[in-house]
Length: 177
Image (cartoon, rainbow, N blue to C red; front, side, top):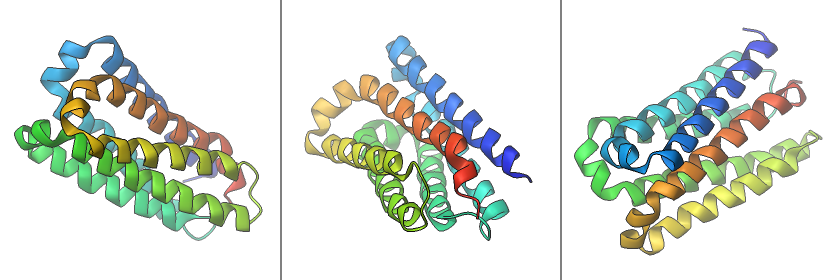
């Protein structure tokens, strides 16, 4: 797999996450009835893309280990969501918050490895990591209000994850050593 293929995979995953986020914002009734399945599939796709890119470029890509960590955590959470949909619907603010916090922390930590290696654009990952981790933390503070707001927040969170994935694709040429 070439560098261009990994770049395209990240951008495609990002676009799909953004589309999922826009659909959440545009159709709250549809989102409410199928939110577990919707999030599970979107998260699974994002995690698989990170794992595939790690498998292909782990020896010649800066910060590849953090892509693997983010991918594994995302896949595990997505499988939990997909196989426990009723429980997931009841605990969605916590599960979604956990995903955002883990993903944000891994992006934040990865940004410093990128900085150490002299990769330009590392600050974008620092900022997105902090935003994602903070939003994940806030979803734990009031789960009742979080469930009411989860439809809007889910759309925004998916869009942010999509932006992060597209940034990985756009800046991926800087990761390769």
